[in-house]
Image: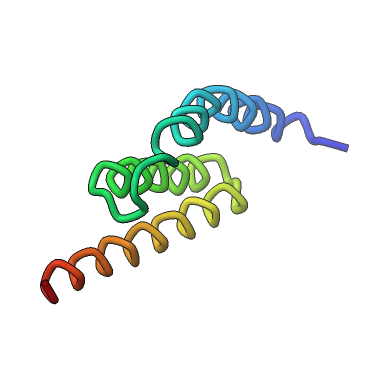
Length: 89
């Protein structure tokens, strides 16, 4: 059973999921069609990751925070790979 003190955070987590839904649609419809190392895609993913980490931290949602951290790591690795490819050429 949820404590009354946990209710505001549960409501805020739900509202964040609703607010994030359009961002997920953009990711699925537009960003997913970009090259995995495209600067625009990496910027979008990094921004979304930062948002998830920040909101997850503020709302005490470790799952959201971990998902954001994983996305940030992935986008950083792809950015570094793109830089190495550019340097190699």
